[in-house]
Figure 1 (spheres, one colour):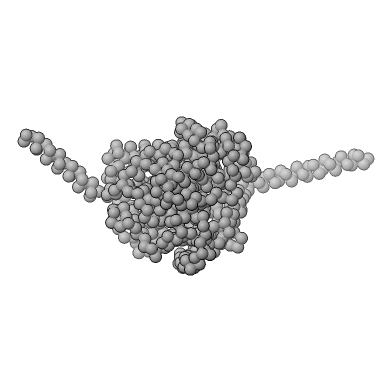
Figure 2: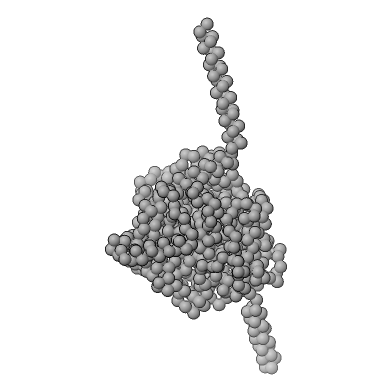
Length: 586
């Protein structure tokens, strides 16, 4: 009996000692960023894709239902990593849509500007290993890479996207796939698949750095950015899932959104875009193509989750899992651009070894996309999709799990700029240097610890602007402005609680509320450095202009040679024709 008591007492001492040791060790920080995933794309949020590893993390942490991000990738990444409004970081928008009038202006340099400190800067100063593997898109030159912004080790894609199977560009804007390791341009291995490689590289960095230090691991995946690509074994799991079309998906997600509490029961359903095609009016060939593309989209999420599971198992095997904070979110809503309706893109794609054959969808050489109709359906219960500050473009999933966080689904408002201050507060990071730009976001730690229902009061505003697409929240209301080609650049007012699909503009019915929110926005824009959009700005035209300029820049030598050859051929043809006419005349 005495032996049993001593054994139990020893065990209790051991457990207590382990707990005390864990409590004295700062928690590790893991940020997993999905690219272009809608609010309901993940399994735990009601999506069709199987994401058991993400779902398991959600089950042990906080699942946010009222989180908003920026409508475009680079501004979101800048805000997430700094806690600043995107205009204060230098990355107000993305280079691909930047108008000439804004180039080089403060806040619009398209790289992190002086005085902007990242989480990596702050956590490294707190004794952390700072590691990154995946998409960066916060600068293009060597001095703008992650190693210049606090990361000890980094394998980073400087572009907005790239092929997931090969070391090549996915669009004419980029000459190649600009991958950098620790600030030096590099290439990819032969057996590359993006989600697998991103996790492998992070594990390599963790194994190769000081195990006595806590770590910050930033994993910004390429999934599910264009081109959507995935291994065949994952695609096979979704055979036939989307054969009923985007209308059926939209209705199904709308019902699930109500069932799991993302929207109030009976809330109106967001309208499909005016130009949306009807599924039953498509040809059999088009339905086959679009079904295949959506199957690959789900499979790419599934594959990413599989490799996230490998990373979690690695942490568990090394005793790091329980003392790690996990943040999982998406940078914006789903991508709407089509890959089958532009002759110039079709020519470029064929010259670069890409196809859109449904029989080869997802495989190496495929150029996968979901297009505007699937994007609008995936963005349910919100309206529109990526690039617009409507709910479909900025309402995203957010999961935060870690030591001391009880499982909860919360409707506390949250913004992407709140994540950095939350993490810094959580680890009790040292104060920033005096010359650092002050963080604009708020710590969500009181919500995570159950000490508060929200960190935003009814009179507090939350605002975002990217290339003229803007939103401001105050209480139950939201104003939204959408630029062409999808919008008319006019403010619209919605009660976002009763009308999360933004179906009924209240501007005429409640002009005082509209005036209040637009005045709040004007004050925000002036304080934060928002530049007015040029007259007649259209994002589609901006992309075309910037891509054309980039294409000529990358290929000017080839184009000059081709021009000389063409002139020479014209001259030779002229001489031949002239000689023929001379003979005939004699």
